[in-house]
Amino acid sequence: MILAIASGKGGTGKTTVATNLASVLDGVQFIDCDVEEPNAHLFLKPEIYKTFSVTISVPRVDESKCTYCGKCAKACEFHAILVFPGKVLVFDELCHGCGACSYICPEEAISEQP
Image (cartoon, rainbow, N blue to C red; front, side, top):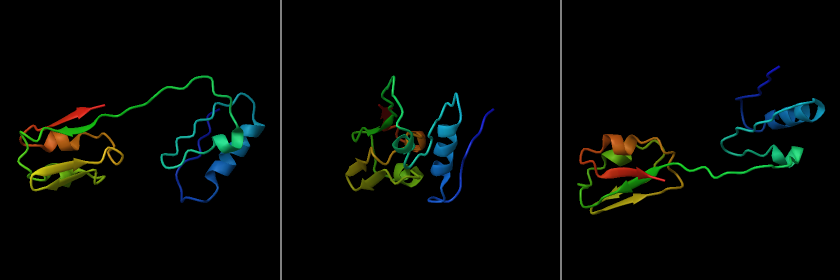
């Protein structure tokens, strides 16, 4: 049987329901895919057997090619790029690695790096 508890307004008890079901059922594989606050581990106290790092590629701007047109900043849905006259700032923490900025850059001044 596959059971998924997904979507809905924050604070309605989805994690509470999911963790309670997981604790009373046998042979459960529980995956907490909450993108903002995956916190089911606080309730279930799992034994972690293996961990691994996850990375995404983020933009790097070659300012020798950049004309500071601002198209990359306009394309970024997450506001991870700010373009000023003569300077581009990239906020790695805001970037989701979608690649829109490098795709839209007319000067091919943006590369993506982990």
